[in-house]
Image (tube, rainbow, N blue to C red; front, side):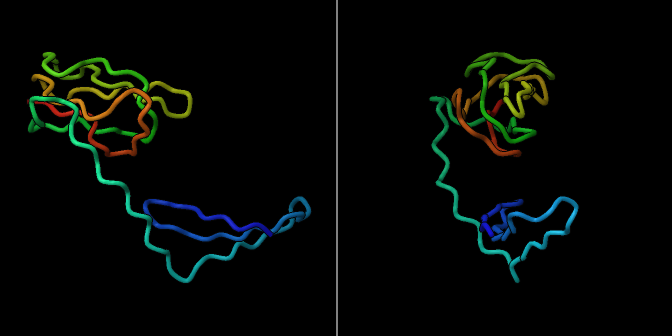
Length: 124
């Protein structure tokens, strides 16, 4: 048997998987009585922009890795313009401006791992 620790939506589960089961035979996994508390994430770094954060958040729609920064602080953007490109499952996913405005901060760097819902940039 092998023990694995799996995190799903912030809940940590210990799972036991039996090895060597014949094909088609049911394999039982032991679930914990209650999920453990997820480890606390490190505090987020301060925004990398000198101008401070804007009032409109640009958030990741999926977990992945920052592939490319399309805009920088001070750039004017139109609704739908790509601000950051995230790579997830070998796909490039543009994260777009939700409205017209100006990029106030870019809070990530190329290569950063991000979770769904993470603030990538802000705009005014």
